[in-house]
Image (tube, rainbow, N blue to C red; front, side, top):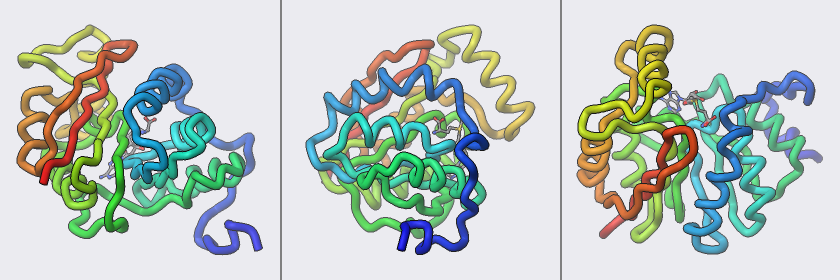
Amino acid sequence: MTPADHLPEFQIIDDADLPVADSCLRNQQPIAEVLEAELPAHSVVLEIGSGTGQHAVFITQRLPNITWQPSELAERLSVINARRLRSGQANFLPPLVLDVAQDLWPVKQVDAIFSANVAHYISWPKLRSMFAGMGRVLRTSGLAFLYGPYNYEGKFTSDGNKALDEWLKADVDAEAGIKDFEQVVLAARKEKLRLVKDIAMPANNRILVFKKYA
Ligand SMILES: C[S@@+](CC[C@H](N)C(=O)[O-])C[C@H]1O[C@@H](n2cnc3c(N)ncnc32)[C@H](O)[C@@H]1O
């Protein structure tokens, strides 16, 4: 029996049809370097908004002692699962349906959380729900990594980020957009997630690292 036999609802897509996000190809190496440096060995990591599943493939290959639990909106699971089957990585778990706005999350406790380019893609109410869920499922002293662009003191850090913000509001969701770093830190703190690092990444992105306190 193959893993796919347990997942009859998934549509298996041919390799050639799998979508590729160019941004992942550019940022996967620097992201993996940060996770390799910061994550304790043998961590179980929940990924929120796994997208194409490319980060899951790259990181599970690069960090074989990490167990990676991807999650996404239901409509995107088939692509992630196709990538999982193609990768053959045992530490790449079958993806879970997780909308950050859900009250109940499909995991009980994890050692760490990773999410790339989701905070700016969703509205403030959804981001607050996401932090609430992260606060519930992240174990005490666990780390959460939020990769993406942020504004500082109310200002965009590049013209590219300003253009991204305009595109998000026009084409994705009028309530989406790049969030203010200072507001993100406060919203996280409300859920017992304390900022411990703000790491500069290529192309005017950051990785915000939060630690769950008791
Ligand atoms: C810009 S993409 C980033 C995908 C991937 N993490 C990456 O870095 O390439 C934003 C992702 O957030 C997901 N997303 C949007 N709303 C969501 C929600 N309410 N709950 C969970 N994921 C959501 C989308 O399906 C999409 O895959």
